Length: 338
Image (tube, rainbow, N blue to C red; front, side, top):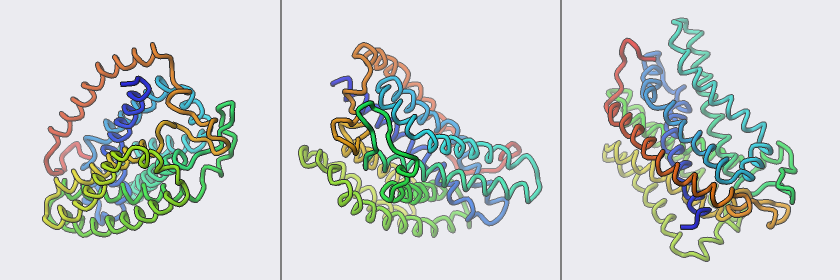
């Protein structure tokens, strides 16, 4: 396989892994205000307690891989999106602080403040991820010097905002299904009812965002027209989405979560297929776009990084699998719980 394509696919795998794994963490945060009592809020937090910090490794690895494989694209993205990325970083920090600090004091005011901080940080982080995806698809103002020529307000265009809202709806659905998998009793039955609401919101946002994409970003389907086999991803996406309500109706949370995860993987694959070979599309002139070829490191660097990836990724996958296996049961509150 072409080294540039290999690293494009690797970035897609890392992004899909982050979306699936940290997506339900963020989804639980989005749904956090729906928990009525302190006990229920603690159950929500402890459902993601063993996982949330490890899941962020996938995002860090994605950033490192982008920097090593496509440094020009990394430089353009992080300089042009500086303020949004700082907001995203603050949101992720506040989410972590909220989880850790909430249980340090019994005051209702203290805990309520961190509850809302957890919710707000989760919504903001998810929305900003969606905005970033929307701008990658829609394109940004990149000049011949490979530098961003727009403003922060240019990044908050209607299309990117629409994709940001879709991201919030998607992660809320993913998080509700994860809670359905991890909880027991009356709270589980309530979550079961919430799933239908989050799924309905997701479907509405998904249909509207799809129509908006086809109308506003027609180039997103060019690769599908030239390579018909890519429509298999669309079929996988539709089947995965269709199986979610079926699995929920049958009371099979594991299959519902698998279907939700496959939906996110298919979304990532569709995003990559629509973007390829671009990493950052220029709205000024197409030839100013940063691709996997004109923004890549040297062939020697890409090859060395591939060897490192082959050595390192099995460890990441292994410890992730072990953590999820060890904590595969239902949520129980103990002495050291959040």
